[in-house]
Length: 265
Length: 331
Image (cartoon, rainbow over all chains, first blue to last red; front, side):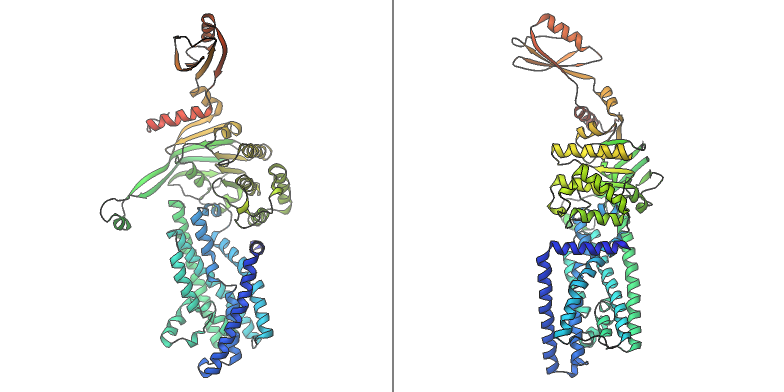
């Protein structure tokens, strides 16, 4: 498991390399957080009842959504690396290394995500806590359930991205699919708008899709909007999707790999 | 160390249709032809041997290397590398081989060289002592320290190739595959790389299989060469042997004191004459050079004489051409 740590170190070096990008992203993040804070404040004063939760909860939801989105970035998943390796014809160099490709992609993505989590998500949350009324989880159970739930959310997002990356092996170009996919995820994952504010028809679709596992479930657990029974039910829902998607990613990879092995990369 | 038996790789290639609505019809095209990239090749390479694998572009060299490294599955035939089957046990095989693709890098584009190497250390589970010792060696032989903190994308091609070679040897592989390692490099860098490969081969007894288009790579490094064309082996033997077998012809260049006289010598063909110089070609088994020279010096005033042995490149070219005109002939 040392390679997970090695890839995290690598992400740190990338930051040193792209220092300007690093700081711009962190500063923009603060502006976005402030924007979301203002937006929910206004919406709350206009129509508190419709939001179904109190002001502190909805602001915590908004801030946590912004902060988590800064580390769990859909567009920066393994599909980007896979697509560029395929385009440059360098996938061979990954296949001559004594490491499982699926695991390699997870380690690489985990390293980058962990780095962003420490340098973007946590500082943003601290600033949100001091200045904007971001709240801590209401009790220990919710805190732990959130940690477990966001870990599952991460694995689900990774798996979806990995499957998209496998499509890049088959179809070489995924730019257009990528764009549609990113929009789909950001809409249905509930990082900006909680699912309970969706119109009924849309909500019933969003409820069964895996995307809500990424942000909506963990954040709702964090702000204490689920009863304990609900928490267990929703985490179970995540767990099932997580296993299904990891397996699906595995199967897709095995198919793509045997295609590479037979047809050439 | 490397044992290859009846190795064959076939590709399906879809037949591209022309004519009306061709682009639309090609979408649903299921018609294909089978192309044999590698056709029934067999060879054995002993531990510590350095073998040159040569052939024109598209001859099947890279496909063969990919099968030996476990990236591609053979259609038929068998590959065994130190009792491991590469495509069945890819990861196990990957630990004992090192690979350099001259046209691609296995280093991470944005990372400084040293970070890529550290990452590889963790992937290959190289111990700290071995890592340290190997880094000393690389610094000494490849001058890695000069650019180890530079990101890979900013390296010159020569530096990148040196870094790639270091990356391939970090885990002390038993077998090293080099796919066109000297492509695009300047003379000095080429020489340094060759020296390094030679050293590694001699000191660590690493088996080396390298493909190249540069015949001086072969002459300087390899005792044995395998020539492949249209997916088949057309020559497998030592470099001296190919000289003896195919390099019987000699070229004699004579410089006369006066203008070139009109002469005819038995068993010789006149190649060209230019000013006072004359080039003639002869087969050394048919007539000895001393015989020609005595004949010439007896009859004419000669200022200079040189005999040229054919270059290995010339020999290989003639072998390629032979097969191109007669692809099914073999040798």
